[in-house]
Length: 62
Image (cartoon, rainbow, N blue to C red; front, side):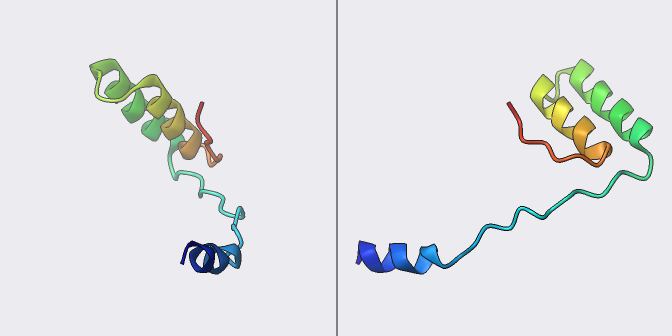
């Protein structure tokens, strides 16, 4: 049964072509994220991810 499950997953290729769209107003998005960071609502890692997304980059985390 496990062999059948593994065989069915082997045919699915990963798609790494996703690129997030750049934000319409990155400065505002980063400012909002900074406010959330300063309020303690998000972690520094989450802030980095939001900043990267606002600039249209992929974020892989640390």
